[in-house]
Length: 414
Ligand SMILES: [Zn+2]
Image 1 (cartoon, helix red, strand yellow):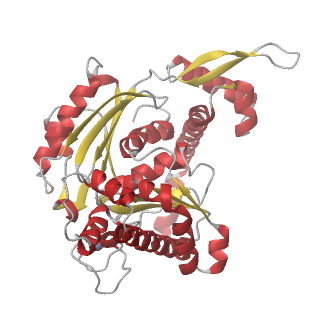
Image 2 (spheres, helix red, strand yellow):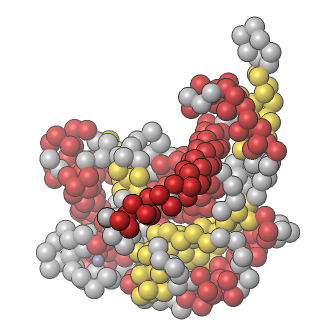
């Protein structure tokens, strides 16, 4: 008791100092939040005037004006012409400065490595695409391809201008330090690329994310997910995955593996899956699963090394065997979506990935019907099932949104 009192007495001056520090920190936090809010509005909805910004965000005109002044001075935003206002002076429009820096987005897929360069308006400036050296590539080989790709897309660009490098990978990304990738389908177990990329000379901040989650962020920002607070973006390609967004936030689970939809069971003790388990959704609706099942009913089938071309040929075949496999695939995909509807009650499910889009282009009504047969009536009545809008190949684009998200959050270089 005595000690407590002593401490309290001698601590009075200290408490005042602490209070001032806390107030400073609060003012700083608020300043940063305001910067982030205004920069994000300009990124997603710009060009906008200071008047628009104040109206949309609820910040006072004085705050909007002083914060945008600061952002202009730091070249994070630029003026973008003027608009007439009713009776008053013309209003200056503002937008994010596309040349404040560059973003690199990469997609380490199950068949190839793609690297793309973007400005801050998310305009693609350069792209390279290389096939993987093997179906179970060594991390050193993939890091080598990423480094060569980054060098190539950068060209004459000063590496110091790179805000960050986002990399989409197959499998679970554990957001530890260093980041670890668990991708059994390509033979990676707790693999880290950080050191290899740093040794190769990459100095910009690195961001790793699961490919489906990268695609999910891109579709939520600019595609079919826009405006939805509760959505599931599903990716069907060689692998099958999903990004679950609840109340506007990506659902990760305890160690970021949430959304491994491809490895949920659709047939107890069914087909062998690449993950080691049996009866997974991916073993039926992933590209390899589709082609394996087709081969079973069509033993004369000659397969190439190009799954994309083989799936396209299956869709175009028109034989009863081919149509049977496609109908079954659409049914299983729909049933898998029905599971998502029952588990997460999304307002929207967005189907993407190259195989998902190829199937969806012809079978979306059947996929919707199968989802409706399996899902509970009430949540199914609330959900729309749509196709991705950013094309079959948006993982690298999605990966580039990872450093952009960090820039918007901090309102300064990550
Ligand atoms: Zn599996």
